[in-house]
Image (cartoon, rainbow, N blue to C red; front, side, top):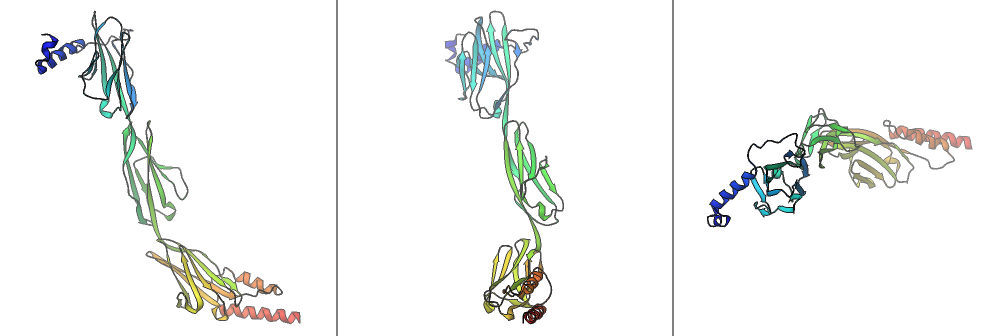
Length: 356
């Protein structure tokens, strides 16, 4: 049957031509390990990254009669004739020394054995190329942000795909970046503390690249007072009592004097809350303002209180003992405004008597 006749009955033509091409690569042709020619040998693995292009080269000579490139049992090219419908595959070089095809935008399904078959006057010769496709890692599943109470057990997961199989690592980024905590997909944190809160980074790496994603871990805990100081202010001056409390969620503040709650604007007193800081401002301090004040910080997990003293202070530097008393009182968390005022009056009287 002629080749032209084959085109009349396409299915018969396909069978005949397939048989002719397959004759070029008889099944079971052994590879002779002692043969040093560029034919009849298995080439080294050819590695390419997904999305890149690759050239499959085959050395030939002027004795060749027919040539073909096959992927497993699928014919890609027979000589110059393209058999595959894949637009990514093209003929790159075809002369009496080289027979090369090119595959663009290589994908995972392109991986496998490729055979260059050459029919000479003597016998068929084959060159095999095993194509390995590397895939960059992709984190396909990672835990959502976590919010737990202090003391709870925390478990987060990070699953990734890639080729070669990616290595997954975890590390704690904030508040201060730390070394690797785990080299597994799962990160377990037993009895978590407030110090373990922050951002955790999952990294999936292989020979191709690295993929990174992050998880926020929020640790809820009751308030604790981080800063609160007594204050000495002269009559008629401005004074601000400051109370700082750290908590998650952020604490709400209340101020009291002698078990009576103080409201914003009452008797010219202003309350300002800015995050974890609460300020009790006296714009014009009077004798009645001196005393022991209580700051209460509260969130859903509990509350905490601390005492602050607003006491009188003399601004006249002719009385250094009075100033020293104010400095000594600063920072104490107990006592009453009455006692402070009595001490102030006593020191004032002593210094006046010594002066006159």
